[in-house]
Length: 288
Image 1 (tube, rainbow, N blue to C red):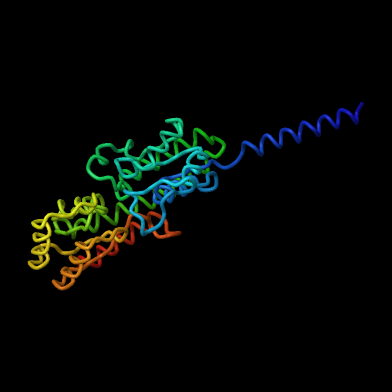
Image 2: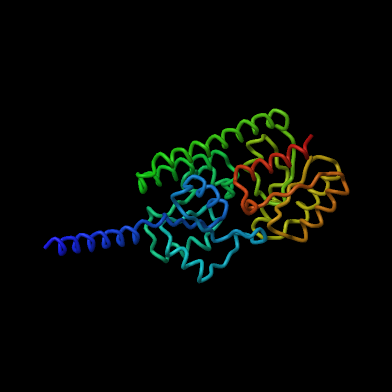
């Protein structure tokens, strides 16, 4: 009888262990953009695994075509993080078609609609990133309450780095506020606003972002700004190439206007906050 009871107990333990192993996988998070996985993985370090759909520097995230492997990743995700604001509609349509629960979809644009209406490059806004950090940590603590202490520690570390970025921006703003700059497209516009910089070529930049040809008047105006030194720096999106932008880079350099580069993804294995610091350093050096 004891042998039988012991056998039953062992069988129950094996069954429970198998159930636990089947359900205790790390939370699977898929981000449409690598930059949001970069931040999400820091906040969920040790308790989630992340995958992004777009991480190659040479790809414009506005104009993607979704693949079968990407759809599979989305279908298997416990949570999906999208930028929103028209930035990744190509993926949003597939997410909707998969029938994902609304509670499993985190749309950054919904956290800051007033910012998203102005510019879709939300990862360049410290305020938006801070909102996401708090919302994402709160979501993870609800789903994984056993990891509450770890998640709070992760959030505190991230917000400490974000606070240091705010301090650096405040210092730079005192020196740079009111300086006039130009962008090949408004990738860094939200960061430039925080620094108090004035972008002089909004119509040209929006045309490039929407893959339309800038008007001759807008091109001529920007060329004149270079010649007259009415802008202090030309910021070019390294992710996208366009003949009109390439020609303007040459004209800017000939006029002695510094050309610096922005991007829509952080370099591989570089944290978002370090990437932001790199952008601030580039502006700091170009605007003495």
